[in-house]
Image (cartoon, rainbow, N blue to C red; front, top):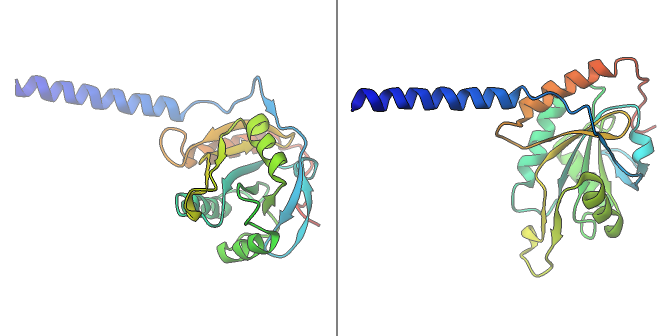
Length: 209
């Protein structure tokens, strides 16, 4: 009985490892790509504020994530992961953080936040949009959920996606990544390097002038 259990356990463990390895080797999405719609928002870095839209992000691959500065949930961890990506990824890759709470995340608040987390102003920008435009971009562009509950405690007012999104130089979504699991940030870094090789001949330009 003990040997049978041990054999079954080893077989199950091997199967889980195999499935995990298979998932981690899924190729970067390259067919049936979803291109983001045009959008224009207020762009804030640690040093500057400007109007920034999809057209300004073309020419570089970029990674998007979604937070709000009053968040008492996972947002600080998401920002920490973004700072790790800032250190780990080539400088050609831009980082774009969308606030899902534009009422309270004013440009002043976002700029202080960018400074506090050490966001490189040459590659990491925080975007704040009018609420209607933000919802359209989330639902119709990124295809991700976002719900506001004004009756909820301050730190839990907005429920939103925790995913990171890889967007290519043409503004097309190439992949969605969780903070952990099969589609980990390790896979994201691998896919970024693959995408950079794919787009090696594309012209590069600064994020903000």
